[in-house]
Image (tube, rainbow, N blue to C red):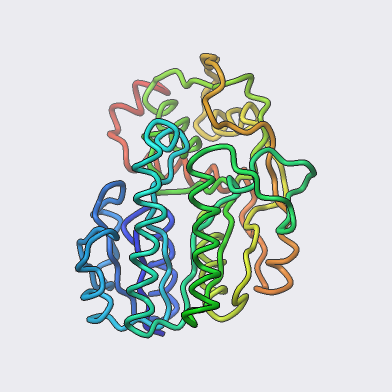
Length: 315
């Protein structure tokens, strides 16, 4: 299968690339390194440095001729979206439309879209499933919901198949520790380097933390199933930030009392997801337990950080 991964030097995108290559598929990557890293690039993938908003994007698609596109490139921060809604919309809506136009013009069969559980807003029932009303409470969640409407339009009127995956809180190796989205990476790096992490609100807000390789597997399964549908991709288990912090402390081998800070704009109280539809239609279920995923992530952080910085924190 000829594939193209937008944002393939990013956190989730690079894991999708690795899985595709491991499964024997032909892979091309586009990224502009706004958040992606060159160190994440798989050498066996063809790489094109380009922004998804570029008018030249179609030329890249024409050169690659992908059958399936995995669209991971995005503005992914709730805080950035509340600080600069125009930028958020430009990347997450106009960027998507540019990708969709390139797909149609070059005969792409299907696009797999990285949507978000943020499209639901504060839930009216739990666990959240695909039938739950979408009432996003941040510009980020709004743009992801709008993107799903564009996908339906292009499927109906342009013949481009799609599957949208509404991610829970994805974590794992390679996650960016700058910004609020990667709380596991943030806490792990801070604890490993002797810093004191900050927990916003009271720490009792609940999230559904799903390991990145499980998410990559959902993307690959969606390439051949689930046309025209949206799926919740989570574990079905809600975990408080306080509990998450305790698990990270245990994996690092320290106990540090965190600082407290006010609630951030756009933060939700509780969200976790029913993945029964993904299990039924895609044959997907999460395989990596939270404690194990955190252990792997912390060990990856240890390898990335300078040995003397780690010694200062834990020695």
